[in-house]
Length: 223
Image 1 (tube, rainbow, N blue to C red):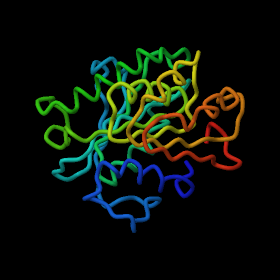
Image 2 (tube, rainbow, N blue to C red):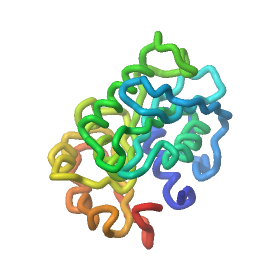
Image 3 (spheres, helix red, strand yellow):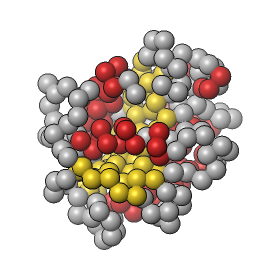
């Protein structure tokens, strides 16, 4: 994970949710001020097949994030980010999606929506109970997880969306991406086989909300 390369941008964009809690002088490449606890995500919650919940060791309330893994990946590919985000004051849900080798992007988007609803419910019994600010939530996704994240963001308009080298499929992302009106950051690697030769790049600035997009020079999709 190239924290020194692009963690600052990710935390700043997601920090739009928590401006009172953090300042621009912070070094977001370093761990934040909060300790946190990691627990397993129950396999029967909202269609996820497993994963993690990462919760700061403080009373909160904190903004809620759902981080989405990509093709052939799992929550293990997102847990480092989740722990880093939690250290800066986010409750982070890190699901495993079914069929990672043949992802159903609409189904995964539904799982993300249901997870948001579940953990924003003050009555949900979980280690995050009472710690979630129900009005503040954001989404982050990598690769195919970026596509599912985009589908959700275009529908429910989260406070911030971070996309790590998203990859489109059959033009689904291109069709809905312009509908996102909240802050978006898109981080792109060099074109290659793993990101369908950078098929998101031609429309990466198309969303109507505040947008920050950039390429990480000499990176690969799997970085």
